[in-house]
Amino acid sequence: MNTTRHDRYSLLLLISLVVFLMLSAFVKEHHVLGEGVLLLSMYVALVASTLELSQRRNWRWPGAILAGMSMLVMLIHFLYPTRMIMVANWFFLAAFLGFVSAALFSYLGLPGSVTSGRLYGLVSLYILLGVFYYAIFNLIETVQPRSFMETASPASNGVSRHSLLYLSLITLTTLGYGDIVPATPAARMFAAFEAMTGVLYIAITVARLVSAYQKVENN
Image 1 (spheres, one colour):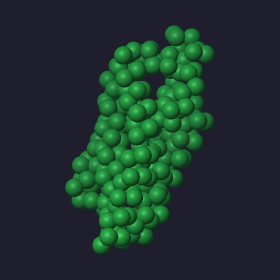
Image 2 (cartoon, helix red, strand yellow):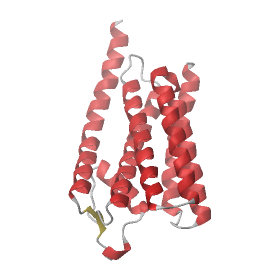
Image 3 (cartoon, rainbow, N blue to C red):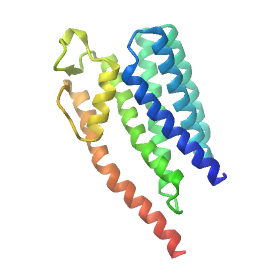
């Protein structure tokens, strides 16, 4: 694939993820118009992720199938928000984001110079990991309510999706304010996994990029 085109896909993915994060901060839950806008922004991120996979044929079609299934279930959930559909929604979204994260991580380790596209992909991968665990947290909370507790809110109110996205991002960066905490064994384990992912991400990714660059220099 043309390098310039792939760089554009990488930039589109990064922008779409940032837009989704920003919209998530301002869209109110259970507001039809706001939920629709958030759904569209996630659709754009899923399409951008699929385009990002287009460089490698082995990843392209499985990714497109997972993206299509996730988008279909999202639409069904938007129209008919039942508990079972919600479980399927978060499951397929987590499966797709995990697949894309693995594909991007594989791409970053390929031989070649450190281009702007790789840098966009590196930042996008970091954000994708946060959104991946956000989907996992929502899946856990849907299957087992009150798996997460917000210290400033009564337990009966539950934890909002915005709060779980916030929890995922601060856990990934190992910041951990402590205002939202995992309360069940499954929630605690995945929160621990995300913290480890955040710590290991920078070291492993930088090592892979340096190794790929050295291969080019040696050749």
